[in-house]
Amino acid sequence: MDGARIERLVTSGTFSLDGGTWDVDNNVWIVGDDEEAVVIDAAHDADAIARALGGRTLRAIVCTHAHNDHIDAAPALADRTGAPILLHPDDLPLWQQTHPDRKPDGELADGQRLTVAGGELTVLHTPGHAPGAVCLYAPSLAALFSGDTLFAGGPGATGRSYSDFPTIIASIRERLLALPGETVVHTGHGDTTTVGAEAPHLQEWIDRGF
Image 1 (cartoon, rainbow, N blue to C red):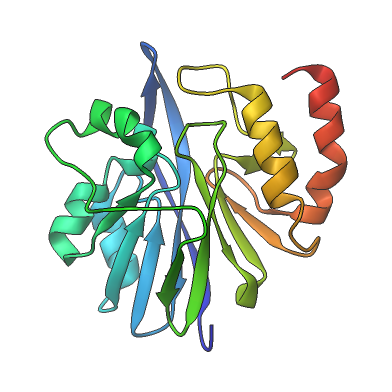
Image 2: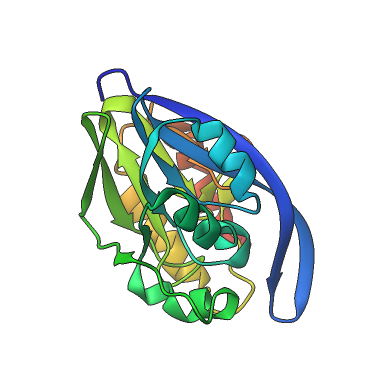
């Protein structure tokens, strides 16, 4: 991605599922250059995301999964910018809990390549945290955008509806740990990590049964 850069915006709101609600801070990732960008996970605050974009053309709003805290601002941002909302179809049941009257504009598929700022983001379907969870791999930036599939210290939560622990472990082992160890993991919440730093943790999480 010639001239492309990664920008992080932290927004705050709530996550709700299975009758509970929790306060959360989300990472919104903007990938692009001075002319165009994509937004990964339009969380909580469409106004703040639009300000961060400035005058750039927004090519797409990419949803790593459809928990409400990752998609709640997506329709407002799409209406403002004209950018399409892209989601893996396996997460439509979760999407409809938050936006019953608005469908995503397009589907994400494993292996799909999204082009922005002269480079590519490759979609990796990584179910487990949610059925349609995806990560986005940008080899030219040595970057992985992991949503809630992988965090600094272990996999995303699998204790609520639509999630499954063996599935997320398989996704991480088969899809993410195969990436170069120096790949920087830009997570849906909290700090970044690297693929190499997380590799030793995988067996620990399997042994602990979380």
